[in-house]
Amino acid sequence: MNIISKHLYLITLSVCLTAALGTGLLSTAVNAATNSSEVRAAQASKITLKQAIDIASKHSLGTLISAEFDDDDDKAKGGVYEIEFNTDTHNHEIKVDALTGKIISTETDRLDSGDIADFKTMKQAKINITNAMSIAEKNTSGRVIEIEFKNDRDYADHTSYYEVEILKQNQIIELNIDATTGKVFNKKIKR
Image (cartoon, rainbow, N blue to C red; front, top):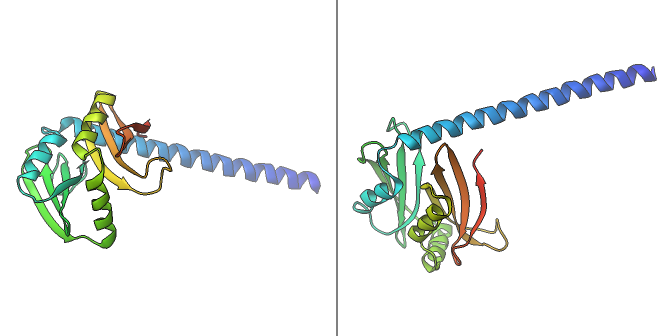
């Protein structure tokens, strides 16, 4: 009886491990496919994130707080840049077509108290978003496709920082830049 129980236990364990490994491999493959489609779409974009920011800034008020490439937006086949500006009370999001440079949509929302606090912190940062983009591009020799200011406690030594994604050849590099020192930390290749 004891031998049969051990045998069943080993069979059950091997089935569970096989299922876990299969799930992990499938997840990795799906994630790699998603990243490769994002890479292909970003490479095919006719305008850069910096150009999209210039286009959007002509139609918005406030301070740039984030900009990102979205490869699967329903409003544009080649992807869009979502550019956000804040005033002391409102957020303005402008979507710019990554192939044509045309503005696809604009949206304005009122800031909540948490967003207002984050915006005040960002305005006091020694490194602004444009400087952070330059630092990221110099560090990687790539092209920024996403940047966002973060004010949280994810990193004990870096409570306010920029989270950046850079397109370099056939990969996307993620890195963080301290908003006080401009130091790059937590650099990795996106999987």
